[in-house]
Image 1 (cartoon, rainbow, N blue to C red):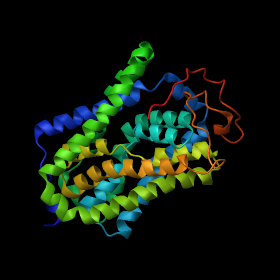
Image 2 (cartoon, rainbow, N blue to C red):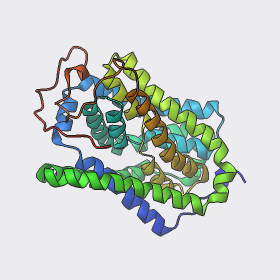
Image 3 (cartoon, rainbow, N blue to C red):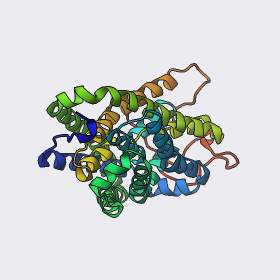
Image 4 (cartoon, helix red, strand yellow):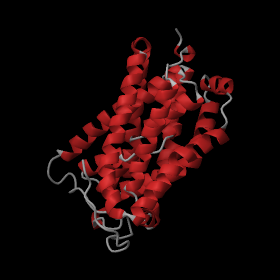
Length: 336
């Protein structure tokens, strides 16, 4: 059966569970976000601007071209476009730390990107999906409203993000402890939801996973290479380039999966692409982080364990100097 005509079985209880899990992931990000992160971002406009441009302009455009080159079915193409338009998750912060990258930049960029995604994500999905030769017909048949998606994303991202930041501001010790629990549990929950969904639709998964495996592998590789390439092209320091690699290459596919079942009625190719992206993205990211971690002495940097504003001078932008004394933010150890 054509993958565009398949609908993945996902009952109301599973959808509610997925919403809770995605909300918990974003809540965990917010618990680890301080006002100092946004202040630090404002003091590093070049790196943040480069990252935002790469995430919300270049990555969707590159994804669009990839779907054309692979001549993907409409639903699979829309799935990749949707994932490309998602913001990063805090896995990018953990991978940046493991790779010896600029954790301060990574945390700041994750915070800024998740806020911007509330508006930019639905606009990007509507724009690039509407341009796609096979995907636009599916979008038209679904009658997707960018405004409705914006409101849903604002609810899914905005509410847990505001709640987490508020708790982090007024109860920093509690937030730090809660983050260490909420983060890992939410990702385990997402893995459980994806595994349960695949088990219920195993025959569909086996019948169509071939093309999805290849598409997701190439897409994820391009996303990571784009982050690395943009960091090198704009002459960011080595540690910042590592952070850029993961901020662009790691996407919150769980949010994409939630939107697939909320607005696209579990459209087969979209659901398979988003679900497999959520798994493969972490595997590929860990592999890249390990390669950097075990690179020969002198080829990398010592992992930064500081909050934004306390990063070492090696992570400063060209011409800006060190940001170490600027924000006065408290230091924090990154847990792996």
